[in-house]
Every structure is written in structure tokens, then in C-alpha cells.
Length: 215
Image 1 (tube, rainbow, N blue to C red):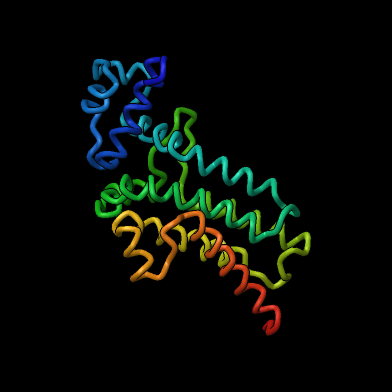
Image 2: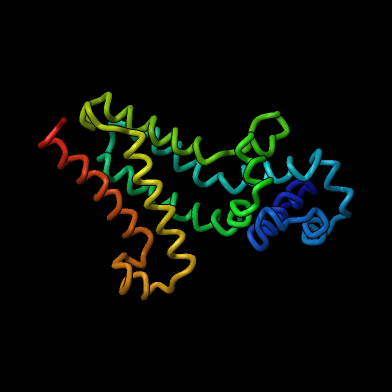
């Protein structure tokens, strides 16, 4: 566990959420894993919602870094290579996130709470939401379109949805399916890096194909 009590509590919260999901995470279990008194949690977090927000922010660190790298690659390498690198990070993120958020999607009250803004950070800001990552990919694609590396008629929101959706589906299948079945039945690579390259190529191939028949 990290050194400070706050870091220990946060690390324990992430661990418990990964094991049990958000809906079944309790402060009592977090305190047990962190090795602290349950009341100590409230010396560092106002309530469970703030702790969940901080934990989700911690878990999203890797994908935030990937989005930052993507935004800095405008005009560099190829768009396909940049999307492939991001797609691999997105698959790993969804592989981590889906088991945690799964129970939330089946709980009407929790789902409504998240749609209304969900947990707030200690600064009063909403915790990371799926739409924010989508918007960041759109911004990257729009920037590439502005410098002429995507066609003027390209639809960045749809391209982003295709890429992110394909990554989420692969993570979902990978969580529930043996690697050999992924290849034999679904016809997909068992290696996430290979799949990321393939899906980025497919997204861009569709974009290039449409160059020949713009509406």
C-alpha cells in the first residue's frame, strides 16, 4: 500500500471496486483492506460518493495519459498509427472498467445518479465520464481534419464512436471468452495490440474508401 493514509484508503477503494464493483463496495470493506478504522475514511473524503469519484479518477489515469498523447500527435506519425496506440490503451481501460461498472448499469437508481452527474470530486467537479473521453478523441480527429490528414467531409464523432465502440466490445468479449475461442469463433486476434492495429486500420480504411464516393 502507498505511504499516506489517504493513498492507502484510495488504493484499497480501487482494489475493492475491482473485486466487487461500485454497487457492492462498502466503506467497511475499504477500511479493512486499507488497515484503518472506518471512521478514518471521513477524515480524507467527505462521503462515499467523493471516495468513489477519487477512485474512478485514479483508475482513469492511464486512459487520460493516452488521450493526452493522442492530442499531442496531431500531424505526426500517421492517423492510423496514432489511433492504434490509443485503441490499445482503450482496450486495457475497458478491461479494467467493465467489471466495476457492470452492476451499476443494472441499477436504475445508480444509473440515474450517474446520468445526473454522479460523484463529485473534492473540487466540486464531476468524476470522469464516458462522454469526456469520446469528446477528446473527436477533438483529435477534428484537428487532423483541419491539417488535411482527414477528408473535409469526415465525421469525427462517428469515427470516434466506431473506434471506442470496437474497443469496448473487444474488452467485453475478452473478459468472458478464452483467447482461443476469440480467434476460432469470433475471428479476432487474441492479442489486444494486434486487434488495436486491425481496428484502427479498419476505421481508416472505411474513411479512405469513402474518398472515392463522397456525398
